Length: 492
Image 1 (cartoon, rainbow, N blue to C red):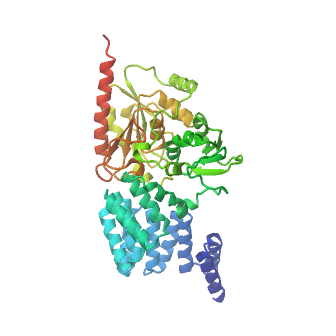
Image 2: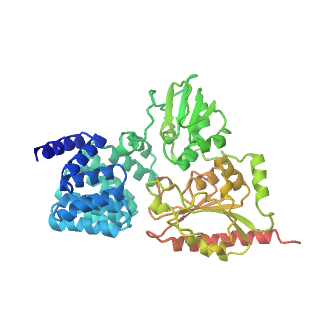
Image 3: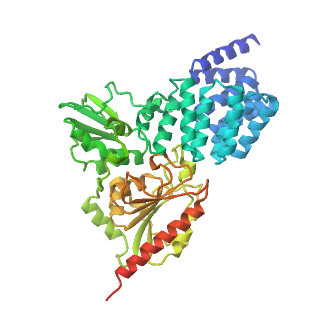
C-alpha cells in the first residue's frame, strides 16, 4: 500500500509540473499495482484529454465514475471528453450531474457554457457563464468566455465590454486580449490588430509558434536587411495575408517566404520575393521575422487601407491550359466550382464546413455545370447529390497551383469558408462565400461584401445552423447569373 501511495504522489507531482508523459507512466504503474485504482485511472483520462485523445479519456474517466459516481471532478472532466467527441447532449448531462452534486461548482457552469456554445445556444451559454461569475466574480477567464458567447450571439459591442472587464481583472491574460482583438476586428474596428498580436502569449499559439531567434519586424524600414515572412495558421490565412509580401519588400529589404510545401509553387509568382521555402526545410540567414497574420498590424492597416487589388495570385498559363483539357468543352453554360469543407483541425470547422447534401437546390438551376474543388472527402459527410452531375477531377489536383489552374477555367466559385474561397478571391474570381451565423472575425458582421476580396459576395446564416436559408439565397443568385449568361450568349 505504501508503494502505491508513494507512486501516486510522484505521479501527481509530475502532473502538476506539466511533465505529462512521465506522470502518465507513473499512473499506469499505480494501476498495474492496484487494477482499477480510481484516482490514477481518472488522472490517466485527464492526461488523455491533454494529449487530444478524447475517446481514451472518456473510457478511462467512465471507469473511474463507475467506481465512484459521486466524484464531481470526474463528471466535469467527462463533460470535457464528451464535448471533444461531439457528444454535446451527453456532455451537458455530465455538467448538470456535477452541478446536482455540487451546485456551487463554477467549473461545471463553465463547461456547461462551452458545450452550449457548440450547439449555438448562446443565450443559455451566457446564463451559465453568468452563474459562474456569480460564484467566482474575480475569475477573469469566465468573463472572457462570456465575451465569446456574446460575440457568437452577434452582440459584438457587449462582448468587447466584457473582454475589457476580463483584462481589467487580469491585465496579462493573453486569451482575453486575443478574443478582444477578434471582437474588435469583427466589429470593423481595426485597432484590434494590436490585441490580436497577443496570440503568441496564448497557450494554444505558443505550442505552435516557430522558435525563431530573431526579433519580429514591426513595419520599420528594412535598410537592406533580410526578413522572413512565415505561415502560422491555415492555408486560407496564408493566402489572405501573403498580399503584404510585396509591400514588405518595398520597405527596402530582402524577403523570404516560408509556407506549407503545397503553397510554394503558387506563391513563387509574388513580386519582390527573394525565395520561397517549404516549412521544415533549412532556412537561409535572416535578420528579422514576421508571421503573415501580424503584417496588418505592422502596416497599421485600416479598412480603407487594405491592399485589395486583385488578382494578386494567378494561375500558371500552361497548367490552366492542361486543366482546360480535362474539362468538358466550354459552351453557354456557367462553370461553377463547389467546395464545402475545410481542414478538420480548424477550431471552427464544425460550424464553417457544410454537408454537401445542402447543395441540392443548386441542381435546379439551368445552364450550369458544377465542378468539384473539394479535394478531401470525409466519411462523416454524405456524398454530393447525384443531381448536381458534379465533374470531379480533384484526384488529379497536386498542390494549390493546380487548384488555381482549375479555378482559372471556372466562371464562379461557391465555397464554405475554406482556403479555396481565399484562393478564388485572391485570383479575382467571382466568389460566393457561405458563412455560419457566427463567422470568423475577418468577415465582420451585417455586410454582403468584404474589403479583402472585391469580387466576393457573402451569404450568411440568419440563425445558428440554418444553411437552408443560405442556399435559397445562393440559388437565386446563381439562377440570375445563369440567366444573364444565357441571354448574353444567345445566338443572333
